[in-house]
Length: 169
Image 1 (cartoon, rainbow, N blue to C red):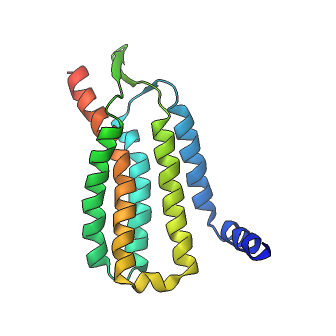
Image 2 (cartoon, rainbow, N blue to C red):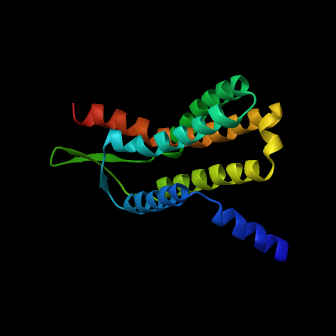
């Protein structure tokens, strides 16, 4: 039990402050999306961009097989976007005072928290087992997992773009 406690404390204390700031932003954004909100396509891209940049930095600076990892990441990012479209299939948009609005939902909060936890867990695993950076199978697995989870964000963004073009036309 002592080793587990030591490991947990080590993980938490060695996490860069910017990661905790990202988590706070995610929670704040997710809570805001529980109620009806104005849709901004640019702001909808903020979370996916943060996670893509986080992944690309890790891929470019640490992995031994980025040429295997990047195609997997991109393919599964696309598949994740299709899964996100399915998850958000019942999301409704409406116009209020010439502004595009979306109904509140718990789904974005769940997706953002799950995405953060998966990304965080992958990076903790890599810091504990750095040998994984040089294993092709883990490089590919990382690309699949990280790409798919980031892709989930794009389901709502794609639906927002479609709604904007349809409702504000």
